[in-house]
Each structure stands twice: as structure tokens, then as C-alpha cells.
Length: 361
Image (tube, rainbow, N blue to C red):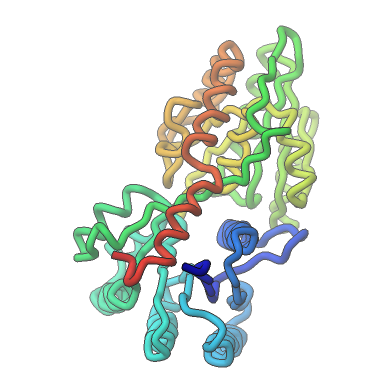
């Protein structure tokens, strides 16, 4: 029997190789595309319009998506789509309807943490179109395990649901290596992500101020970009503190930085938080997570770090940070081990199985 050739059109926000990604969707999608190609999958990239374009910009952008899937219809058998939903849901249902008319199968990849929130908050019109989107999919991938029971409650057969979390490409040479944090050594803290208030960036600054005020040597690095006015505010708040604003980094630059960090502070209050790429990447390097109980953080971290209530104040984070320091080596090994066991590219094995199954059943 000959080798099964898998041909996929991959639609959604897509980052460009070698460049900083504009958000978690784009970064995760690019990673998966590169990994699929490494496994011999033929991938047709269908890039969604970039954010902030306005009505006509999005209209032209989605017409381009439709045209790409129509023009390339002889070159793929499966559409793998990471839909934006919300106010794009009707357009995306029409898109799925078109590819089903062409006889293509659909893998609906539900990313981020707003799916249940939007479904319950928005009206009957929105819920109708979401159910229609689910009906058009042969299989539904979910980023968080909590979505599985929710989808079953909407009538999606469990056999059609695949847990498809964010993951890292495991590199034995740099990930999971045993490290130490000696007495008197600088306690390196890091945040990676969008520089916006709802991600808890200012809480992280308060933690640095508190820990440094207790006599600890500490260095906090922020990786990411934000609005110039907010970045200026953060720089003013950080005046006199041991803080570095590193801006956006490519994959290689981020990896070399994570390799020398000890604590990942992620005090996010963002309503749409899901499974943050940066959280898993940091843990894979043995960086211990100190997070809020938002999105899928608790299920990702498990017992390999500290998860605090969303309302926890900065002094709770500072106290927890010092406790982590006292038990850092064990927690570091646990963080890397948890990623290696649950969140590496081996999750693609299940995705590949879903691709080649007839009807995903």
C-alpha cells in the first residue's frame, strides 16, 4: 500500500517565518504548518487579513481568503481553519459551506479562551451560527480540555473532538536541562507577550519592587511590544527598578533568553486568555510559572508552578515568588517534565490521525 498523501489548506492568522508573530494564533499556526510540512503534509497557506483594517479592509481580506480556497481547490483535501468567530462567524460559516460543496473535509481548530464566554453572552443569532459552524466540521480541535464537555453538551459527538493544545518543538540540547539557582544568585524573572494592562504587566513590576525591597537580587525582563503611550508609562513605573524591556524577539532570541530565566510571571486578567504559547515555551526551559487562574493556565501548569486567584494582589505574587525560589530546582524540573510529557509536537500524531481518518470517526 502506498504512502497516504495528506493535503491541507491551512486558514487563519499566520505569522511569517523568522519574524515576530502578531499574536498567539499566528505563532501557533506557523509552528503547526512547519511541523506538518516536516511530516510530509502538503500545506496551502491561506492567510487571514491582519487586524485593525476596518470594514473594507476586512472585506477585501476575506474575499482573498475565499478566492484562495476556490482557486486552490484541486490542491487540498482538508481545510484546517482557526476561525476568529465573533463578528466574523457568518462569513466563516459561508467559507466552510463553500469548501464542503467542493467535497473537502473540515478540521475546525477552536483556539483561545473566549469560546464558551462568547457563546453564553451573545444572542440566539450568534449561537445559531456557531452551531452551524460545528455541524459543518468533520472534527473539532480544542485548545482547552474544558471545551470538550461543553461541545458534547452542544451535540458534538465526543469522537469528533480532539484535544489539540499549544505545544513546543522539543529540543533536547536546550530544553529540560537541569539547572541550579544558588544562594545570592540573581533571581531572573520574565514576562513574554503583549504589553497591555490586562496581561498583568504592572503586577509584574510591583513584584519586582517588592522582592527587591526584601533584599533579593532580581532582574525582570519584559519581552513584547505595546502602544507607545503604554510603554512610556511602564518605563516611568520601572524607573530605578532592575527591569529590562527587550521588545519583540524572534524564536532564536527568545530561546537564548529563556535558557537563563528562573520565573515566568503571568498575572493575566485577560477575558479571552487561552493556552498561552509563551507559558509552555518558558516551562520547557525549566522556567517556573507563577500565573493567575485565568484561561487554561491551571490545567497547563498543574503542580509544576504556582497558580493564584485572578484577584490576587501583587504582594501575594511576591510571596509566592520567594517560595518558588526556595524550591526552584525541583519546580524547574517539574515544569520541563510536564511540557515534555504533555505539550510537545507529539500532539501532532493525534492531528495526523484525524486528518487521515475518513470522516474523523
